[in-house]
Length: 474
Image (cartoon, one colour):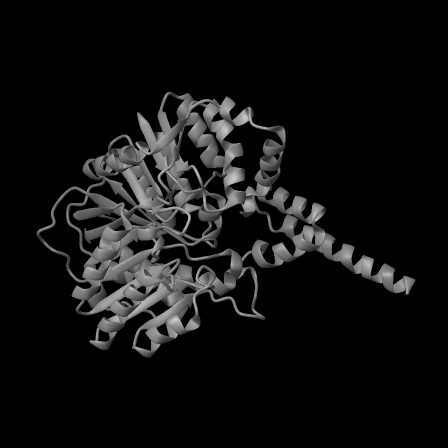
């Protein structure tokens, strides 16, 4: 029996060493590598399990088609999306080129934007546009809940599908694990083409758990687009039983709808292996829309050679002249973003970060506090939103540049998830989103003294520091 004992120990420690070696050879960022090494060292058995499900890179050869389809759909879109006299202002040219060169994202002019900060307004507009659909509805969401709002949207989609409208729907499989399969089967039986993004089913339970589609996109008849941070759930109207959810979502008319459509169709090929390039998906937009509002839809994913949206944020922050206002539900910044924020603040830029007073994840909330001392020491103003859970993801800079979408200021959004943001090079849109920030600021507590963080009990700070080491994994 003693030999069996030593055999088990040998296998056990060999597995740990092999896993550590795999972590090292994966060439992740040093902070993420160290976080995994610490987990494996202090929690060997659990560490191996966590790494198996959440740490391994998704096999690039299984996802490589997304990149090739990205190029193909770009070409098909260019056949239809003619733009005359498009001139990106000089100040934004390098940022626009960054997105174009790395993400094949094109800027589009002539855009009209409606901003939603209330769930009831967003869902009413979404349902109204679905009801007006004549040809196609393309909807993609991280979460659709089996609750009154989720069922209402599903019923609206079913009604249009039964009337002959093409309806395609993508949801994230892991985010919707709690939704009964009957919910989606009813949609399929009614003629809706439904696909789960990277479904996780035993025994194919792999690191797919870690790479989720966090995008929230919708395109109606190729003419109306929605993009932002809201999922499809009642929590944005009645709360989640604990607190109300506040978020920001946009409705777009004009040229940028082409880019939202392209983002959806790339994802559709990924989940369905069907390439849709027909002209009807890129119809001419309303010729009455003629303005200088230039927009660029940028997507990011874990297989891209570059962290596209993160690099865009970094460039915006370092290029700011007067101010940067950011709303994010989670604040676990990567090293480049943290450095850029502190550099901007120390250069005299008015940097403000708004986050919820009470989050929806205890671990993330605890880890976030450890970053606050650094930003407060640099002179950054931190605002704790108190009127519920602020899930909004927006950035406004210098009254001329703004972005809104699904991207949080954390490792997961910048490095692990499939995300989408729309960037505006337009004074009017920037001022409107700035007013959203200022309005939210009325319901915030200002934290501008680092001693409020450092003077808390030692054990609390110790726990937060320990959890911070895991922030690249949260």
